Image (cartoon, rainbow, N blue to C red; front, top):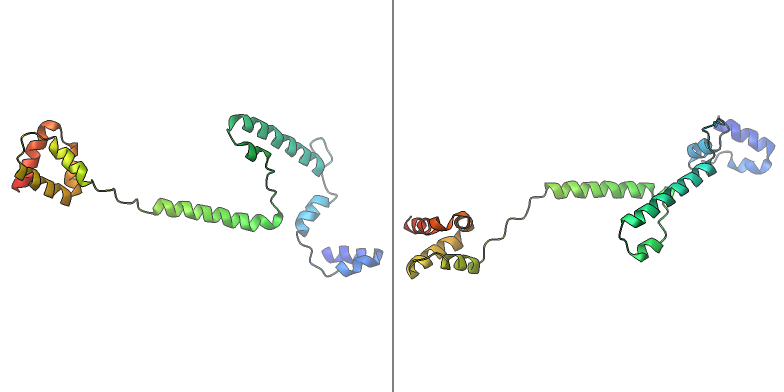
Length: 171
C-alpha cells in the first residue's frame, strides 16, 4: 500500500519521485497523526486542541506543586528539558539501570556493625562497683576480644552485671 501511495505521488509530482524507495523514519506515527480516518464527533479533538489542553493541565499542576514544594528559585526559572524521540532509548536504558541499581543495593549485605571502642568498654566496667584491678583487667581483656559479650553486658540490668562479669572471668 505504501508503495502505491508513492507511485501515485510520483506520477502526480515529479519532484516526489526521489522519495519512492526511501525509508521514512516513524512512518507509522506520522500516518496515525495525519490520516483522514479521524473521529469528528463531539469527543473528537485535533492535535492542537489536545496539546493546548495538556499545556493548560501542566500549567495548573505546576502552580499547585510550586505551593506544595519548597524548591529554589533557580529550579522554578529553569526551563524543563524537552525529550526528543531519539532520547527514548537512552531514557529506557537509564530507567533499567536505575532499577538494576536499586535491586543490587537491596541484595547487598549490610556492613557489619562497628565494634565497641576500648574507651566504651572501660567506661562501662568503671561503673560496676567493687571490682578489683585484676578482675577489671581480666574482664576488659575478654570484652575487647569479643564484641558480642560486650553487647550482652550492655543489655543486662545493673544488679546482674557484676555477677555476669565474675562468671566470665572464672570460665
